[in-house]
Image (cartoon, rainbow, N blue to C red; front, side, top):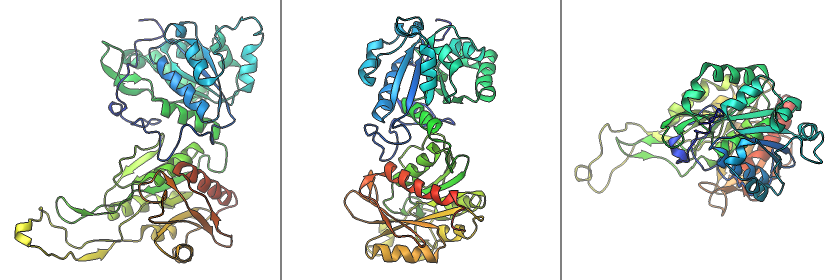
Length: 445
């Protein structure tokens, strides 16, 4: 094993890595997001991607590819030892730009300065124990460390090493200096399978999707949402009928999860209160899992009073069985017909809008089958929202379970803003832009 810790991060299924503070568990990047479409916050940005000598370097090719497809210009800087793990040509093939390795290369005078000044973000993935130690010491012994010392851009560090190296007090102290002393952003490491023969443990490099999102947050923060507390509800609720059955709906949670991700990328501190969903939680988001409407009500009411923005994207069941049975209903005992006595659930969105502090922004959703705008406008007024997002149920490419959506955004005193069919992440980004504009002027007042 080399001092840089190449014995880390063997390939393995993403489901084996539990989510950390800046990590998502699965490989599906986000609901409705298309990595092959350039868009904010990555489009037009310049990223220096530093690759150190670890087995996780193979994942850095995916990071470079994804950033490029999202519209970033990626300059890859390889340490000398990194070239023993991954070929420079691999990076050129996915970025269209030749990787850089030698600070003294012909024609490269002051290369480190031009890279450092031109970068919107410097990302080190994988960052080995050796590199972290050199960075913490302020060394400028090769092209990558020299760029790091010379840049004013935000820096994202993705550690990757053996679990024992990660647990070493010096590594912990070095990471603390980079994060707390220099303000670098750390993503990972994850807890999972390491290199062959090294077992499992903390030290596995974060998945490329998490690293891409960490770069997105580093370049996307700075607007009105930076540091804002954003509360998002998502998915449907399940109201128990008996021990195994429930009343629910077809909501997948994709729209709410896309909104939570977009808010985090914009620099917000995001809490996502979600009913059951197959969608992995976005990177960096505090997930509060609930099942019933009353559980969601309790979770929202505990948090909405301190929120700067509340987005109610959940499809909360309007009714629940009055007296759910403790055991499974038996058909042979009930017969061919039965009736379930229903009682209304609390209107979480309307109740919470009245509990928000002055200057905050409350956003509702209206899914309708007819009279879309008229019904949405009535909900906007009746429930005290600042904005409401309306979409039509059953429309192709829109609504429940789809990866795309077509919505109209309504605000008091403003003409409706109709969006075309877009990926749900793109829709979320547009909604966040409207929210930011209102938050910047103190909400609805």
